[in-house]
Image (cartoon, rainbow, N blue to C red; front, side, top):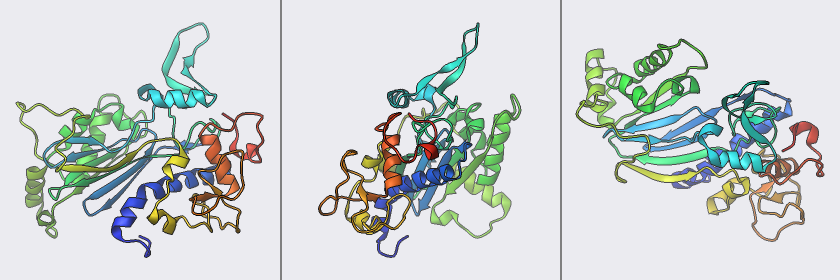
Length: 340
């Protein structure tokens, strides 16, 4: 946490800082012409506040102590996200299933060229600039009763629903629970894709006793994450508990970088005019371009109009927002590869 910020300010600025960090990481991939890509689900836990930033389809869910279930990430698969299909097609790319010559279209919806089934990821340079690294970010505050977080790759979620993952892992410590979820996912068809799972328990202070015997530890987890009675219906993934159980502090999944890097008192401390808000390169006086600047006007804005971007990050922002088209002026075409 920056020393210039209070804890409250840091938590408030964290979602925006994560957006900048994801975009910078994506730029680092592109700088070495890395054509492979990855999903990312990044979780920060500060006492009872949980902040999750994600691109791709490595889902993160939360089960509160009362058994309610919350999505903490967004699914950026084209098949389940019509808004992302609209954004990518508006950017100039085609979204459709794989076309087999002489046969029907098969498989999930993909972006062409490239054939990626995700609209957001880190890397994937060869697919084009419409595949962006701007993450969905959600921040929630748990009650002091705690909760359980499950993060898993698509190899788990392709074979298990959230209900199945939670049901097979209740009553077990986090490390055992993660193994049980993976084993349950691969049981029907074996390992077909990356199948990774992490389980994190956020426990009340009274349950953090040092190194209890295994039997006592299991009893503690059984009491907190007990199996539901068959007579009690399971809540669906989209149902939410009462506000005093899990409080939503922040959520934004917009693809617009200029919207995500909004201004504010705390942001002025973090995103200084002397450095780029994304890659942190030092900016000479008057060199930075405001995230709010008109793409055709590069004159210096008056007063605090930041955060500010370097020329390279500004061009990336324009490309990710669909404002740069093939044939348009650009000094970074060779770096960014296919144009939207």
